[in-house]
Image 1 (cartoon, rainbow, N blue to C red):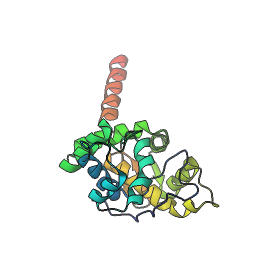
Image 2: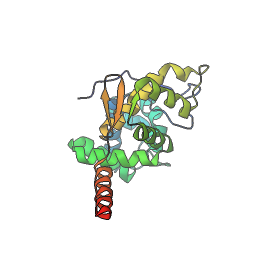
Image 3: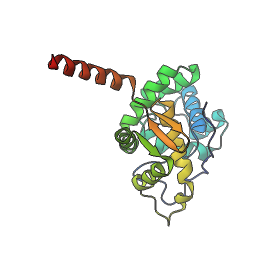
Image 4: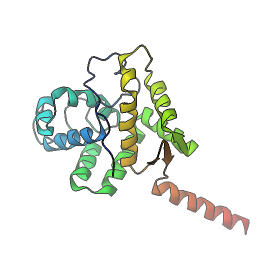
Length: 202
């Protein structure tokens, strides 16, 4: 069971927030509320961020500061305050508590984000990484410097990203370490490759 991480403050005006790797503006629990609220207004004509915030039980800035992050993941439409088909699949999976739907949607969305896919590739290559090292790479990719106000929220940014990876069944936390978990299709591909190599040796 995931533990709730500290919620990031509204960051609409924080220098260093809107960068190459869009940062989440809240915890994974908060983002789940936002996704479900967006799913509720999917049939409305031009829903507003305030309407979404009211449905989620959040303040408007809590929603607006997450929109760049959701768009980077391909979950939110570029021109409208509506979920993409992928976002709808994830929100529906969350509503139904269908772990298979959640895992697949999260994994697909990460591939759409250059920054998050790079972080995941790094974890995949290393197998295990400390939380401190992971935070360092988040700072690097997001181009956050010690002079920016955003530096104070790095642990919360990284925590939300880790929880998102966990939701996709891609990462496991073990104390102060992160362990990469190969998706099922990767495992199947590996077994098939091994089988071919073994047959070639006969």
